[in-house]
Length: 359
Image (cartoon, rainbow, N blue to C red):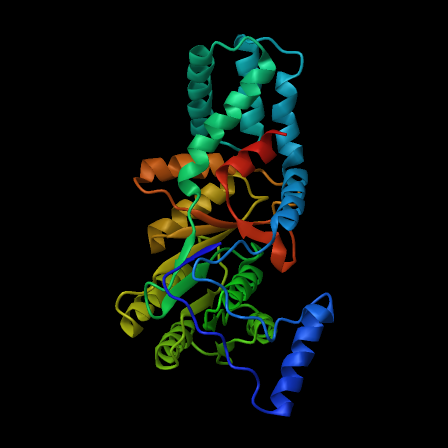
């Protein structure tokens, strides 16, 4: 799930009976089976494995397919009993547009598909579906990239997005995966705009047993500066700043995000190392508009796409991939989510997503 540059030594066990009892209580609350308490497990290898084993990954893929079924089935139906002719391509064009692939990505995929059909010499429409999966996989492949942690000390991440996209929840899940990988994480509660945002982040900090820097009614930039400074002083591996959700059309609030970015650079000149945008998978082409707007203001380095377990418009990732080509550098999709549990946030893989969308 992550590409680590260094290995953290395992944390020492609790030195007092009281500390041991506290760890035991937290583990018992979080783990589905007390017998699996990880208190005495050794630290993971430098190259972190996938968060879930193969069986759990398969279950997650099934949920992804179910989430994309509404848009995927409309594409798959095009090939049922069809002939390879203009009517097939016209129906496929409509289906891709309905899946929110957008005009430009749809035109790109159809042109590439026709080339593949001509080169392969296939005569059955069912075979064309497989070629479309290949074309979509190739388009999405540049978005497939691991999140790199450990090159900088600390690695500073700034997480942005509109309200309701699942930003704070995604931070909590990301923190859990990083902590499981042996990373010392510090959270910055820089969302001082939304009611209970600090409390929500504090709950995740408690679950993951990580530290949090928070100020009641404090200035977001000040909170972030303090967090980055504290992260450096405490030898943290990762500092994650949770910022207030906002629409990209709210220019005065976007200016505040720019200020937070500048203040982070003052606390650590080479930071932020990651500017992550959380996108709601239900929003379709609006997700592309958000990506463009936040990128213009902050220069994005990665995406997290959430809520792909409902009536998700999965074709929008094709539009984002094509935009990345036009941008000159793709913005990778580090993670996609299909539910509320920790295991529901997984790494993005182009082939898996293309196949899930077309089933």
